[in-house]
Amino acid sequence: MKTDEETDDYGLRKDGEVDELAKLCRCLLLAALACVLRPTNIMIWACLASMILWQTVARARSLILAASSLADRLYYQQWTFPAFRFLYFNLAQSLAIHYGKNDWHYYLSQGYPLLLTTFLPFGLAGIVHALSSSPSSALKTTIRRQLATVSIFVPCILSLISHKEVRFIYPLLPGLHVLAASPVTGFFKPTTTRRILLATLLTVSVLLAFFATNLHQTGPISVLAYLRDESVFRQSNSTMTVAFLMPCHSTPWRSHLIFPGIKAWALTCDPPLHVPLLEHGRYLDEADRFYADPKKFLSRTLGKPPRTKSEYVARMSAVEAIGTVAWDGNEGRKAWTEYLVFFEQLEPTMKGLLQGSGYSECWRGWNTFAHDDWRRKGDVMVWCLEGESRKKRRRLYTEWESIRDRMQTLRGNQ
Image (cartoon, rainbow, N blue to C red):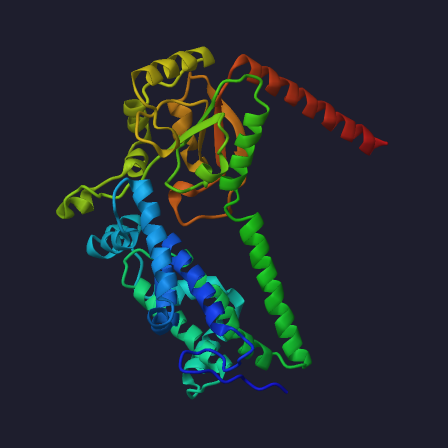
């Protein structure tokens, strides 16, 4: 049986046939790139490779830092350091609290359970076993101790920030799986009882995965597929416009609606960057103001809803002639669009507000059984501004459905 390989003071294998230093340089090059893309990753890699980072690969570190600085200079048109801005935003100004405040034990009581689900006991056991084992020069033991240290260090640092989300610790999942592997294989010995328990855990994991990917909060993705199809099958060459009357980040519309023929805007939730610290408690972003009084917000911001497609076209031309419309997250004035997307919770309000207008329901998609945010309850709905071509298409579709139902009934009677 092959024993654990010996390592030197830097954790590199003592094997002349393996160029460990070259592999380490490539590893740290990718690690530096990961930290540039998401600054919080620096906590993981700083914990894993801080000594080696400063002692062996200064050239690689300098190369990544120089490339990152140049890219930031070209994008922001000034010299800046995003990692510093990240720390200043989250710690010095504590603006992350604007997006919600969580308990100090969030990552322990909710983060790790959501991350590991049925393998939570084995992941925790792996961390304890790795840290309690005696120090050794064996490569496997060293790696496990490093992974266990990171699995504790990163959540502790992130817990200092008021706003917490489970996605912040997603990069720890591969390491947690490595730590959980040994307790899993040691626990599930070839006995009937243990096999049944293993099958039960795997079944629960599969059911959870199916529920999360196919039944829970699927509406925000389904509605984007519907809007893309609408754009493809449009009979006119005019630009399709969409407004998302939803809480911030309810749908990934910016990454899905990238067609040049689609323009959209959504309610914003910008943090109080230029608001005095004493007034942060009274600050309301655009989404907050909308849900406080939807009718008042839409009346003041958009005006009366259009009654016909031609009226909408005339209004849009006038708005674009006056100034910039707030399409795709840009600054500007918002305007009524052809498609309005919102959750079912808002349906009674929208029915009263849009009564007598040219809008009517054109799509409804399943979202979830329940939601902890009252603003996101119910189905995802789309109301459309009906033109003559759309009314004709809908009438033909309704007739086709009626014919299809009659055909199925006749086949059933046969």
